[in-house]
Length: 482
Image (cartoon, rainbow, N blue to C red):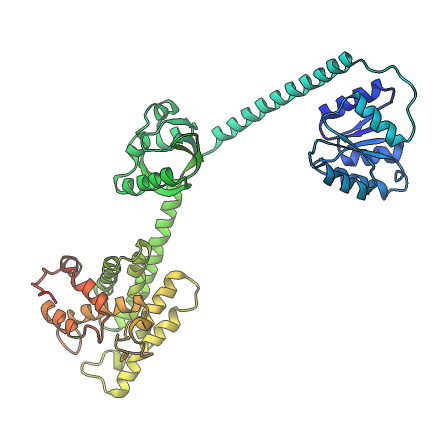
């Protein structure tokens, strides 16, 4: 007999019973070994488990039947499945007529083997029930000991892996004062606290979050506690010695009996990543600023103009309730609004006096020139800058250039830049005129509310007197309400 099963205890139990029934037994731990043995040894009967990892019983029989040296060997399927009808259907399709359903004893094994062979085996002394049960218990005990040893080994290995992770692994009861049940040793090199210190103080986590981040993070934790959603956020923490650590916190919510639940997750130290991002952002912003200055120098203006427009755009975006990321992008991208002036002739760009119609048309080309310079890179910031360059001279009533867009056809970024650019232009000296006072500039812009400017954008800007004064570096005049 050949027993093919990936589980050693099952193989040993079946082999024990078959041996006591008078058969010589060989064992194979997988389908590949079984095929090889069947070809070389040609057993009288093969008992094969169905659920094996690398080659299941159905594939084993298919391979066996395709090999002329072993194609006629009868096979019995062994299975613990409760879907007997489905197994019988598949067994019939494979040409297997006998199925041995686990758990089985000597009588059932004897009956199935006899049926599969088509004739009874040589008479042997039957295995006494008490001997079978004793042997069965021995095999089961050996399997249990092996399983326990394997679980302990896996547990030790898992704990070693957890302790070697650079991330802080934790399990704690949700809530800012919830009990922390486990924290990995990485908490000490990352935050300076020993495992014992961390576990002893349920408030330590919340207390050490940077004050500027605490409300946001605690709100995210509260939402996770109430809804069972996973937690994912980034925030700054104060280490034990007071230095700041950027943390990326990712946790899965685990429901428990009762009202509460637990969070099991990882806290990564991403300070180096954040510093690299900040360095890249600063480098990118400086590159954009210098490109913007190239156009401004040709226009006989100063870098102060592009700085002020940049901050005005950010101010308006904030007051309109746009997201923090877009507000920052507006600040970084808006200085390139006039980069297209690089393509305008000096005689027009630096003319000290009004432009004639042809010169005006040539000057207006700078919006499209700027767009062509900036568009198409696929970089989010440059695409935003391209949109601003092309649309910041459009007017809300459709009388602007270069495309005569109207109302909300004009991208919001262009409508914001239009307000910021005109205000700074009116309050700055130009080659063809001196600056207007703040009050005069505000009155002129209010007169164009709804024609040149989007009313909502203009109102958001003019409602920020103190912030405007801080950016302009001038005291705020008394600006009458609309």
